[in-house]
Image (cartoon, rainbow, N blue to C red; front, side, top):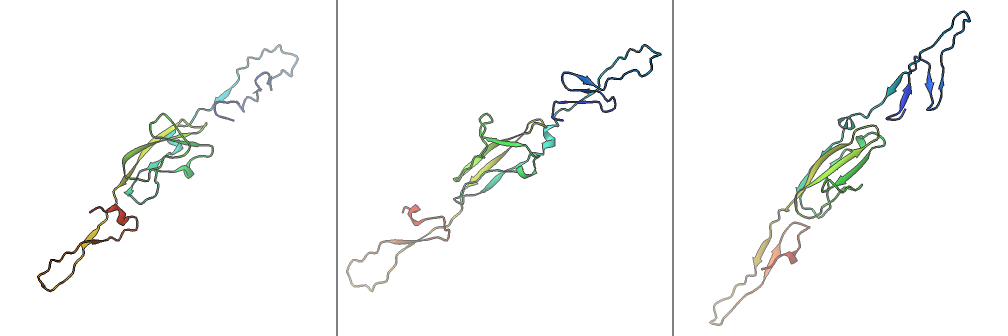
Length: 173
């Protein structure tokens, strides 16, 4: 039986196929003039609640790492036949979750799960990518000279850091 379908009452023995009723009671004793008043039974199946789908989304919140990120959704735990859609505005939906790779503050991702046997479930979570902390040491060149009355100068510097994502070209002195 599909959602919204009608199932015959198995106790009555009557079956309605959309056009005809079979299993109508018949009198087997000719000593009676019998009129049967038949009221067919039925069962209506309505959608389960949205909560019954069990849709859950988890925020992503971490420092920049150069990789695209999105929220986590428990798609593997959802009932068979469930379609999950994602949106950044709650109106335009796609089958792929939006992703961000650069610093961003609390970008909301709306999630919708649809299944013919359940009311539509919705939830939301956020993606936050914070600035990656890095320490850069700018070390000026140094030299030692003995005084000789001439003018001396030194220029230049070296840049040191231990973060593989950071590049010396990002430093402007």
